Length: 291
Ligand SMILES: *[C@@H]1O[C@H](CO)[C@@H](O)[C@H](O)[C@H]1NC(C)=O
Picture (cartoon, rainbow, N blue to C red):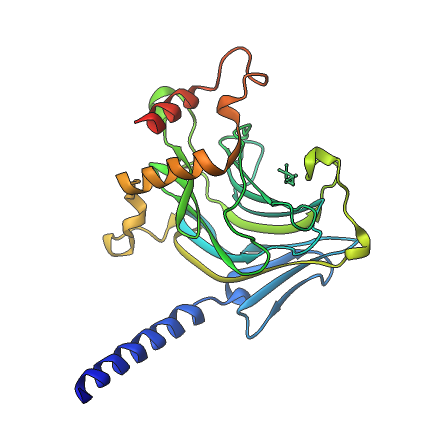
């Protein structure tokens, strides 16, 4: 009996110390720089927490110190609580220049009690127009939740708490440009876009509720860092499994379930917008989902 307890305790201790290692791995001061907001972005709690403020005068934002060329990037976010209508919290990867690539998560605030909208988009070589939007299966303002981007040469997958919500496959074989040649930085910002964000701009930001605050913690990047034209993923030992990962059957089923229940907009079904026919990648996506 005693030895069994002993085992349980040692396992608990091991898990405890492992978690300590994982959480201490996140250091906002080391991985990010504050880019704008005149003091409205703050790194707190021993570099483990980052908060963005938005008030009537300005929002705020930060970006990663490193550029990445492929990665599995996780961040925990707690979104603006209460009446967040008109506010937008963006969290995205983006390269530079006029033919930039971008992988976007945007969280569109709402009146208290009304659901946030998660807006996603993928740009390749300066062209986006690939929006998909979702509601969430939880309130994203009461707790931290993990939002992840898997970006490898085969596909881009958006995850919420480990559940895939969107996949953008590499379909270069049928002539769809895929982001794979330009390194990207991770960016995040909180600002007001009440001309379009909530109910298409009908609901405005209530500045009497300012400051609005979004919080970030537990950043983790399994990524290839790009620096002076070389990737950190050169030797086999630095390449993670994520670099060639594809969705297995179980994740495809989860994705299908989430899209059926929680997707509120899909450019691939918006006939008003594409009366002449959908972008090429749309046919493949729907084939995939039907399987
Ligand atoms: C806000 O709530 C309304 C009503 O439930 C919903 O239709 C809308 O999608 C929500 N999100 C935004 C960003 O407007």
